[in-house]
Image 1: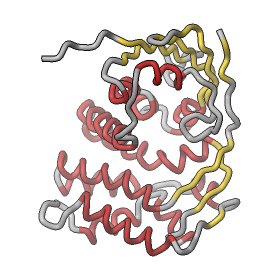
Image 2 (image 1 turned 90 degrees about the horizontal axis):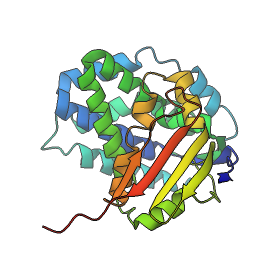
Image 3 (image 1 turned 60 degrees about the vertical axis):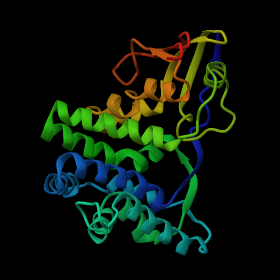
Image 4 (image 1 turned 180 degrees about the vertical axis):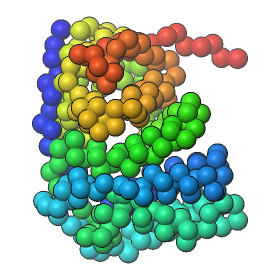
Length: 277
């Protein structure tokens, strides 16, 4: 057995409103197609009408550095291109101006653009605060969808999380051996997805690994701020992502910190390749 120590929780965190646009555009488009225009607008408005921005503003209040101002026009052009990609004029329930207005009022986009305009901003951030900026608004949307639509709402959120996770790294594929090696190696440069994790490698071979996660900042964040949707948003699509990397990968997991256990037990293994048809 060997421990993969918890990397430092502070890491370079870089954000701009366009990176947030892409995620919220995906949710807005998916919901408008699945629920229709009026239901989508109602869910969105009700979710953020009484949004408490205190913690978000405290995170944004100090320590941030603005990026290169020459990026401003590029970011605006990218934002317009993204809106047109997700909501083409001839095939959308919402107009581009409506979409832009919705996004401008959605946290944390509104809170970021107000003090920082269209600049990219960055600072040494900790995992907890970075998770809040990236996922707080989405978690509120997830809770609203479940409140309104019950189990159907859960399925909608799962589809959106899976879609976004796979879209984030469409070319991230490789061998089973590569995946297991990477999964059980010490992280050299921590980022949002690795900082704040402490892992214990119980056993491993080229085609199977048993790993216990002993500490997880993702679990702490969701348990404290969005306990109802923590597993759904942070854990439920793990195997789907592994299979996207390699279709022969499988995950067995019987307990998670997110659900109250003292560890997450990851057994990652390979199955025989399916014969060609």
